[in-house]
Image (cartoon, rainbow, N blue to C red; front, side, top):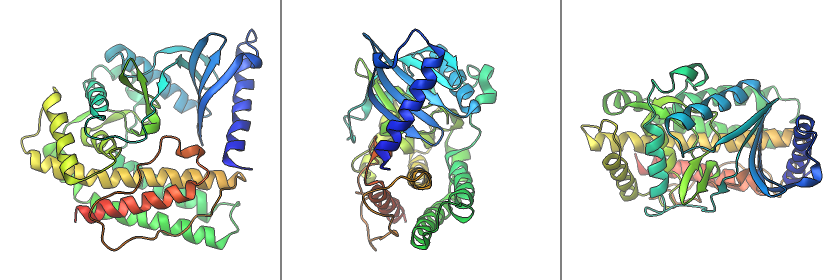
Length: 357
C-alpha cells in the first residue's frame, strides 16, 4: 500500500465518522481539496456545496481538548493569526473556516516578512491571557521535546516494535536516530545559560514549518496548535529561520534584526549573544524536523506502506559551508520519496552544526 493510498483510506474513515455527527450531510457533497495525515490525526480542506471548511480530526482526546482550548484563547487575545473555529462536533472533530493553504515551498528575506509579523502577533499574547487554558499548554521546550521523542521513539519504533524484521532498516534508522541525538546533545549544553540571560518566554507556537502556515488576505495564519506553550521566543524564531532557502549567517542576522526591531517584547541587551542562541536553536529545530519525519516514516512502514526507495544511512559530507539542503516541504507527509527527504534533512542538520562550530 502506497502512502497516498493509506491517506485516502484514512480520509474515507474520517468522513464516515464526520457524517455520523451530521446526518444531513452526504458523502457526495464533500470534495477533498487537500489533506494531510499524522499518527495522531488528519487535516482536510473540503468543499461542502458552496462553503469551504478546514477540518481537523485528532484521535487523542487530550490533543483535541488542547487544540480547541488554545484556538479559543488565541482567537480572543490575538485574532487573525489562527483559523476561526466554526464548530466542535466531538469525537476529535474540529471544523474551522476555510483558509487557503500557503503555496510557498521556501522563503527568502523578503517573502518571510509576513511570517515574522504573524509570529510577533503570536508572541504578543501574554501568560495572563492564556491563564484560563494554562493546563492545556505544552510544558516542553523545543530541546526537551527532541530528547523526549528520542527516548520514546527508539523504544516504540525500533527496539520493541513487532513490525520490523528487516535488520538493514533497523540499522539505518538507528544510525539516523544516533546522528540526531549526537547533534542535539552536542549543542544543548550551550543553550540553557544563554536562554535565561538573553531571552524571554512567550506564548509560542512550537511547530512552525511550511505545512502549518495558511494564508488569508495576504496574511499568515498558523494552524496545528498542539504544541503551543510558554517557552523562549528563540524556539519559534529558529523554526521560522529554518524555512529560509539559505540559512546563511547573514540571513540569520537579518531575520533577528527584523524581529527585534518589530516586536514590543523586551529586547535583549546583547544582540550578538541572542544571535548565538538562535544559531544553536537552529540545530535543535533541524533535529526536531528530522526526528518527526523519521518517526512518521517508521509509523507508516509499520502500517504496511511502501515507498519508492528504502531508508538509507546518513551520508554526510565532511565540510559544509552553508546548510543548503532543501527546506522540509509542506507536503512531506504524502511524499513518495520520504526516505530521500529524511536523508536530505540529515545533511541539513550536519551542515548547520558545521556552520556554527
